Image 1 (cartoon, rainbow, N blue to C red):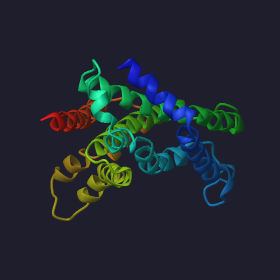
Image 2: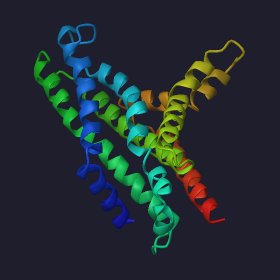
Image 3: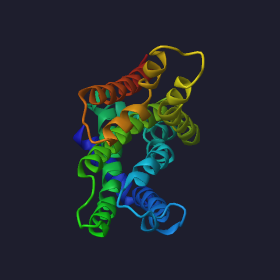
Length: 243
């Protein structure tokens, strides 16, 4: 697994993929947070990164499938997946190496955004008058959300040799799991506690819960379960090629 992980990271950072991905994320969030007057934090009148944590998941929905779309699709298109399968590696080791490499890239992209937090921290009146618990919880929620999107992207890449198809499939699944269940919970046909149960099936509800600064074990179990489920789907997809 370590060899695959290092190989994937080297591929990310020896080409423009890693740098372009991080640049797109930072430029997009920077423009919305500091430049565009409709959403600028400088004009908000209060020190908060709430808009950043509202915006980041939607950028991730597009960005992470673009990062992961080549993971297995490129291997299948070039015919190197058979060569990789002959190595003394299990399917789990191969997919976990690729998964953790893409997740590492997402976390590295998040690190420069700590500058946003420090700026807000200094601009607050008095200095430091920032909801630290909510900010920390939001960062944890964003990392877990990115981890889920990486698992979805890896799975989408394992079912097709076409990178564009993998990107579109990953984008659709990420958007569906993040957005659709909250919308479905608002339908009039749901009653009693059914609307709450439907909402809890989606990623947004658990991400919003962690953004309030409370690290609930139910949210952690949900994120880990969804990650494992899509990694299991990926492993099954890889195994089916041997069958």
